Length: 176
Image 1 (tube, helix red, strand yellow):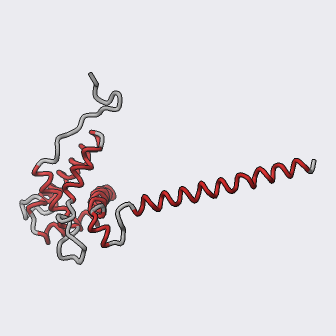
Image 2 (image 1 turned 120 degrees about the horizontal axis):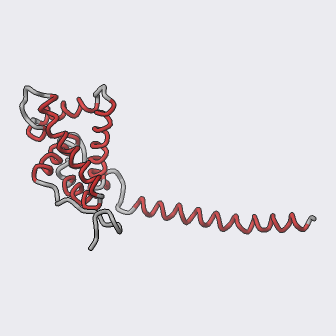
Image 3 (image 1 turned 45 degrees about the vertical axis):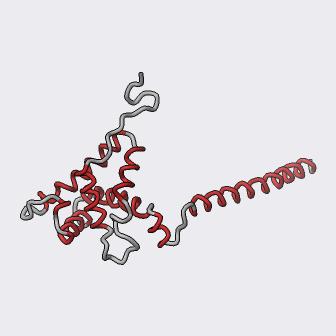
């Protein structure tokens, strides 16, 4: 029997709830709207599916933190826009945009930081979509190939420098 947090095992939460998926969909459509001149919208980029898969690989603590952040952005509209009496995902696209601008331009550092974290995760999910990457000129695996080429060049350079160092060391001992 494995105990929590022992031997690398950590509990996982179930997949996103329909409410969490609705929140993410609204966030993705607000940050990457269909009429913004982007290759595809946030929904078309399957941001919700990306988050679901990402969460399945994270430890429990991070899963809870991200889900709490989603719920926080959902209910924040009740506080920041009390006249609307609506949660974020039920606001109009214009009201959702105003709500996120409020967080982005907030004078409180922690509020801006929270929004930056959320926006970063959304951006990561969006850019990971193959169609978005292709529109940006990134082919699947390009970064992996470039990293492998850099590593090979570094190894080659190191192996070429090694004999020169040995020769220099040998010639300096010959002069003694």
